[in-house]
Image (cartoon, rainbow, N blue to C red; front, side, top):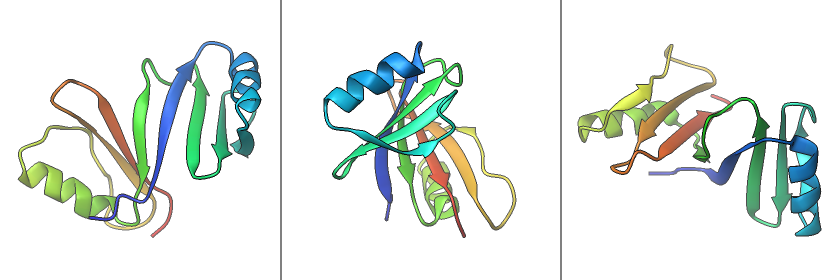
Length: 110
């Protein structure tokens, strides 16, 4: 199962302060609106900073086929919190691990 790119999506209180902190660690911005969210990278490490969008931190994967992963998770008995819509195109879904941690599978393209 190809999970694609891995990142942490962090719920932050102050996007500018968080950006400055992670830039000190060598991260640099590569995507985002700079007001509510921002994606940062340092080599293969990726972090998303999200102000006012999430209540908690989320483990994020960007797979090439989120629908196949969702089907496998459902078949294994996992509860899908936010299900995929449609049969093609970009999509996403959320599943909780046994401890209640959110895993977001966010497919950007077909």
